[in-house]
Length: 308
Image (cartoon, rainbow, N blue to C red; front, side, top):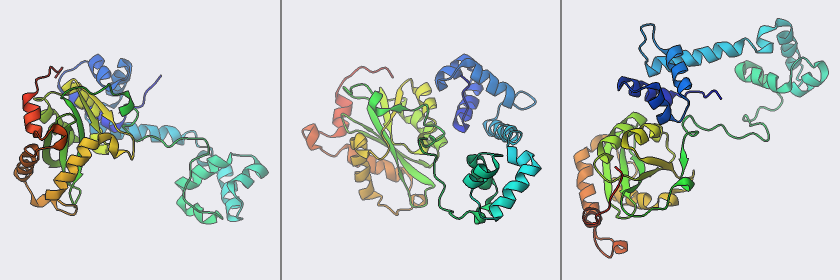
């Protein structure tokens, strides 16, 4: 079955191509078929054969837009279009137009009106757009390839991390946090609030510590989770939407961070050195659940074998 490539997939493809990885390796990393990658690179590369994620995404969107226009009955048939306009001006609803004239379905007319906002004034009811009964909300661009927390294996030992971002006032900077679930050990860094920055920093910081799994919040800043899995040879899971308790260790530690960087703080006024000072304080703070050992003592002294 043909799989649509998303914008974030294209970023991953471009990165892996720069590393000279094969279509088969890229397909495995993204969880798609090899021919999907081959088709994507062939169709959306520059004339010189270079694959740029931004330009590839623009080409794909333009191609899809052009293909849809050819099959839009109202757009390509002037007679039908004039009929629809005339009946809408008489305050007939799309359902009444379909029932009376039978030219197009009422859903087709509603979609046409969505593309022509000036026609909305002829509708008697102009509330917010609703999904058709029985349909589901379309998943965000990176949802389809996500592993649910319910698929996560039982957590035993160190190296199972929970992650999130603590966002600054201007939402341009954030503190990326990872907390080891068993020891409470915190790794945190001040970074630009973007998926690219998250991916780069995760691979840099988590490459040198035990890393069996990572469980994230559903923020779009974790859109490059497949690249994180590929580079760290780990498995990334996501908590349910609106269920912060599923990442309780991380949420509690983020609350401790907020004691030092309260909500409303402009992160443009702090440095990563400030963040590391707070990280050291929290990692050396005795915890009741650890029998009053510190996260640093637990993390450094408990010897466990890990795959990365």
